[in-house]
Every structure is written in structure tokens, then in C-alpha cells.
Length: 171
Image (cartoon, rainbow, N blue to C red; front, side, top):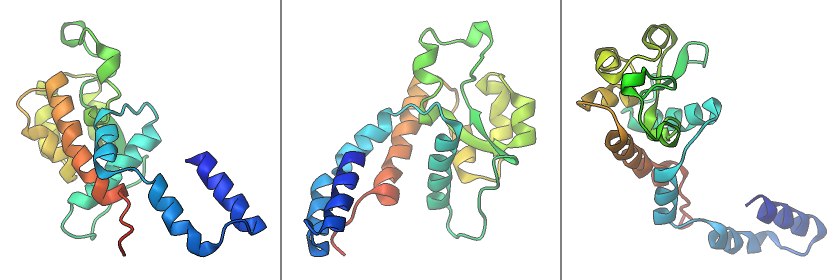
């Protein structure tokens, strides 16, 4: 995409591309909705700012109104539902494959997040249920938390990908 944007910008600047030619070029580059969902459903995000941005966008999509918004990173932290450093008894054998999956992340008040740290899901669940953020309260609807739940939640998040980031060139 970056290469495409560079070449397109250069073409516009030097006159090789006319503005009216841009839309068909972008349509050709845009991923199909199914491809976007598929990529989103498999993504791992180790950068907290990126994960936070993606989850904030989904939170806004979930809200009925735009009266409330997600606060700054100082007040609302990125929470790893399955912990980054779980207790030995709760550690998944393929820990690194799941800990940074977007489906394993949520947004949580900083003071609550600090108190929960690396506790297992059954000890976090009640606090997640009381969260102000819809995206976080939904996590508490799960009875347990492991690979299957992370994958299921990530697929649920992927359903929002096309409405938030999809390309609709029909307008």
C-alpha cells in the first residue's frame, strides 16, 4: 500500500495521473470485505498504541451514542485478558501465540488494571463485568478464557472491521 501511495502521489505531482483516474486505482487496491475480516481475525498486535486504537474504534462502533469516549492511555490501559505473565498453573503451552492476539486485549480503567495485573480470568471476570466500556463488559460474558474464547472474540471483533475500516466506493 505504501508503495502504491508513493507512486500515485508522484504520478499526480508530475501529471502522469489525472485526479479522475484515482478512484478506479484505489478500488483496485482495496481489500475485499472477506479478506479484511480474515486478516483481522488472525492478527496479533504487540504495539499497545495500535491495539488501543483498534479497540477504541470498535468501542465507538458498539456505543449507541457518541456522548462518551475512551479516555487517554494514562486513565484507560490496554488489558491482556489472558495475562502476559500468567501464573505457571494457568500458562498456555503456546503462550506467545495467544497473548498478543487482538481478541485477548481489552480496554480497562488504569486503577482496575493495576489491581488485576496477571491474575487468571476467573479472578478478573467480576471487575470486567463492571466496566464502563461495552467492549470490556462483553468479555465478562464468557465463562472461561483460553484459546477458543480468544479466537471467538477476535472473530466477533473482525465483524466490525468492514464497517469501520472497509472501503465503500459506491458513494
